[in-house]
Image (cartoon, rainbow, N blue to C red; front, side):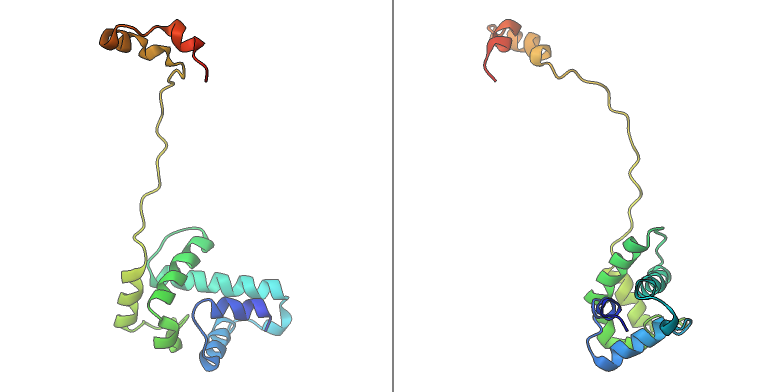
Length: 149
């Protein structure tokens, strides 16, 4: 198995050799790794893991990287690779404690930001002249323009 694929699973917290081997075996149970180039192996592992995290965490992000980031954080924070390695990428229902732990530590999704119109505002400081003149009685736009920047 290529080093980058092994590093991907180690980055999820799989440090025990048996658990690491099991995670890799589970990730590639539906394909023949020997027939795939190294970059395709990593893409397959990332896609499969992102899809699993999306289901487990009930996330609807369209971007695999976003789901992987959230899922990896939750997986590491709960130490799931050590506590429940046999359930990684499982299609069977997860233990309730595992599911609750992962969902509890994953960030809450927020609505997308909506663009709002911003009215054009002059960048000229002269607009403040009248209020300042009323308050202090001495401000003038000419003096403001002559002042060094």
